[in-house]
Length: 87
View 1 (tube, helix red, strand yellow):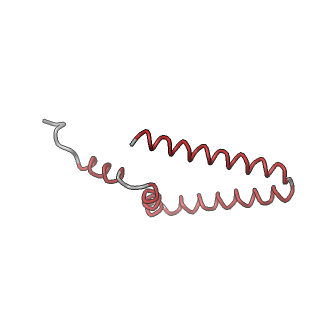
View 2 (cartoon, one colour):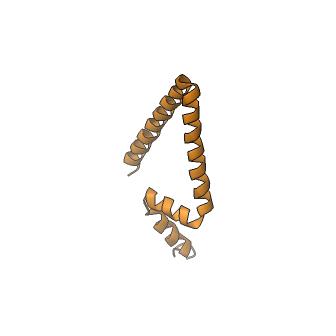
View 3 (cartoon, one colour):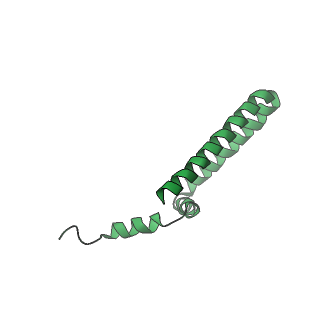
């Protein structure tokens, strides 16, 4: 039958699915280092912007930092909940 034998693409998909998040990031960085450099530069720009904002408007920067921390906690919490439900 045509659908009974797995193709070579299925084997590669299974191998990639078995990788951890850190390994996937390493593979993506190795495949396209220019994107990794852009992401690092954007992160450094955001950090520099936050420092400059905190020097001029410390209250506004504090709200931005608090919002960022809250969003990070929600994202990590959601990730943990979804991984426990899924596996």
